[in-house]
Length: 172
Image (cartoon, rainbow, N blue to C red; front, side, top):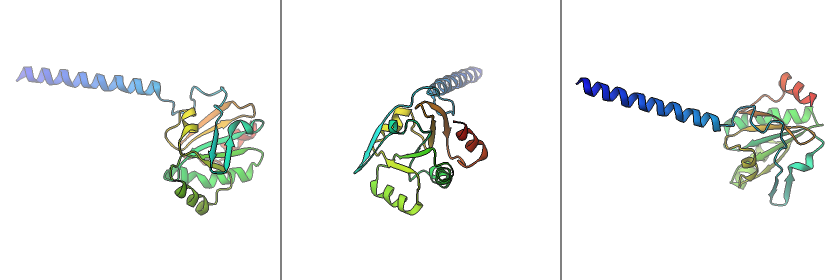
């Protein structure tokens, strides 16, 4: 019986060590935080074509861009849309650019009609633009300055009209 206890203890420690190492590897590769490696670097340029509409990120150089990757099936994305609408209304000098990763075009169009989005948005059903930024969990939002450099990343839903965020954006 004592040999069995020793074996079980060894296996438990080995599994615990493996879990610890795996978590370190995943944490090292994770760029989900609000200070990713891209901060201070040029935002990857992309062009998204959705039917007759086309959006190219680099066309917004000279303006501060709030680039929001979202989806109609994402509850936190839906939660922050009213404040993104309000941010665009309060700060027309900046560009709120939403990129939907929805693959279902009909669901996307219906969502736009129901939620009255008043900022620029386009559907990238192939998800090329978000992949350039390393974004695969939504919503993720990047603040890009007038020179096209990424200044900040926000994860999950935000209140885009909070005094802290408005002040930060005003200073850019």
